[in-house]
Length: 339
Image (cartoon, rainbow, N blue to C red):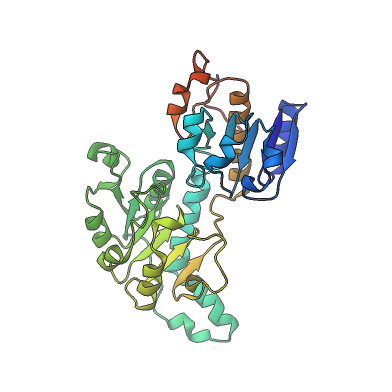
């Protein structure tokens, strides 16, 4: 059994794989694009991608490939349509990083609302008077618009409620009853929630429908005192429009964990924008989340390599492929190996 990894998973994940599959051959490519090493992919049973891509050409030219594992919930860099057509499940790890990403989003809200980044930079320059900038404000009583109430959005909303914030919920896949059951005020219209929210936080997957869901028209709808948080995918926000909005004071600030190009170029205007807090796509990189994601991903890949249907995949239609006819579902599938 051969596993190819674009980058090595955490030591706990590697240990779990070696113990569970003693005869496993593990190839660490240290290259985010498997198209660069077709020789390694020729006899690969499983491909695990982290911050990496996998296009249809790679799949079509990997004759033994049974499964693609993604240590996370986003799969926009994997050609899922081709994988489904070929009967290759794309394993994802829903639930493994919910708390980590939600805490990161909340931390960005707190840091921006207290102007911590600018205050530290200016203090180190000897500017004690930055304390009188007048930018800090309390979160209690403020309205946070949560765009997307999936697992991460729900956890974020829970933290915000704990901070005394009013939660406004927008999710086109949930009706009013379900949104209100989560303790959020239901908004059917995106434009309305953008106008009402003091903070907007994005927690939806990147699709052609959601790409650039926040661009110049949406930024102009927001309050000039509002903050924008994006811990989802860089393509959700039109970066050029955001730079303009920040420079012109259209909104008060933004917290970004994700970028259209990762890593961004040193000359990227976002890196030198006023009132912006940046992190290097690290919201899901807590020690706890990294272990859970790695072990859950590997567990799913193992089950699929053994011919069992693992439920946590990007597209369950993959199991309509003839190669899965008559196959049983994996048991104990609600437990990741990490606990």
